[in-house]
Length: 130
Image (cartoon, rainbow, N blue to C red):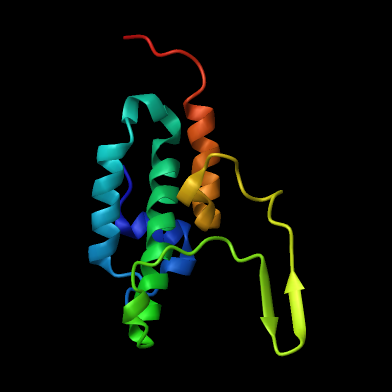
């Protein structure tokens, strides 16, 4: 079972509790417990939980930043993977098809989500004895 200290040590990028509050960590950790069958995940349960929580903390931080910048009108707006940007007469684009996963939906919105979805595929392989 993971705890906040273990999580923040494994993922130092989440050390700032102002950006990634304890309340949000606890919310997503508890949600992961409801969504992930521990016996199915076996030895990968802790890693799966950490990636699950990391994914949602990144999404939370994006929303919090947009709202704090006065963009509350767009709070909750779905944002996909950005593949191009234009500023003045300069335009740049890139292909993300090699790093996004088919049928992964919102998990493609963060690198943690992509890693989590790859684990889902591995954990989900094989039959389940009932």
